[in-house]
Image (cartoon, rainbow, N blue to C red; front, side):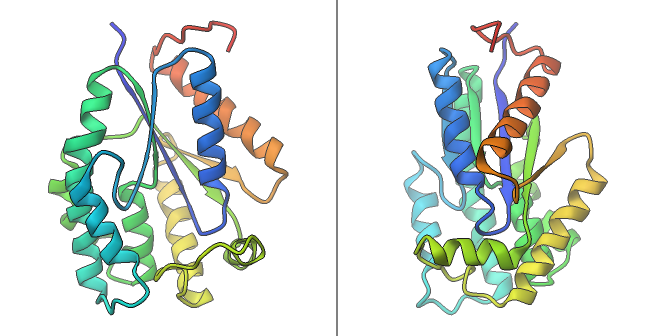
Amino acid sequence: MKKGFFLVLEGCEGSGKTTVGQWLFEQLTASGEKVFYTREPGGKESPVAEKIRTIILDTQNNVLPLTEAYLFAASRAQHVEEVIKPHLAKKEIVICDRFVYSSYAYQGGGRQLGLETIKRLNALAVGDLQPNLVLLFDLDPALGLERKRSHRQDFDRLDQEDLLFHQRVRNAYLELAKENNTLFKIVDAQKPLAEVEATALNYLKNKLKEANYALKDSSY
C-alpha cells in the first residue's frame, strides 16, 4: 500500500537548498506525483506557525537563545500537526525546507544550548514523526553568506550572526550527519548547480525506491 514520503532539506545559509528543493518539487510534479512543499520556521497552511516565524526572524526583536529555541519548537508543533502529517496521510511526497535538525544545529550548536536540551524541547513538537531522508547541503559558511550578499538577499536575525556562529552551525550539522548516516545524505553545495541538483535527485530516487514509494513514471 502506497504511503507518504517525507523529505527534509537542511544546510547553512546560502547553501542553495531552497533553490534545489523547488527544482525537485517541479521535477516530481511534472512527472505526475502529488508533492507538497513547505518550510520552517512557519509552514504553509499554518497561520499560527507563520506568526511565530515573524517573531523569530525579525531583526528588531531581541530574542534570547532559550526563548528562540522554544519559539522554533512551538512553530514546529503547529506545522507538524496542521500541515505535514495531513499531507503525508494523503500519501503525498512532502518536501520540507528545514525541520527539527535546524534547531539541533542553530540553537544546539550555534547558540551553544546543547543538542540534548534542544532534543528535549522538540520531543513533543515532533512526536513520532521521522523523515525518510534528510539532504544536507554542505558549504563553507563564509561562501554561503557571500552568496546571499551577492544575490542581495535580505539578512534575517539569524543570518546577521557572526561567522563563528555559522561555523558552529555547520559543525553541528556535520556531526548529526555522521551520527545518522543512514538518514542523512551530504550534498556538496559548492559544486555547480546542475551537479548539485543531479546528486540530490539521485539520492531522492534511491530512497523512494527503498521506501517502496511507487512513482507514477517508472523511468523517472
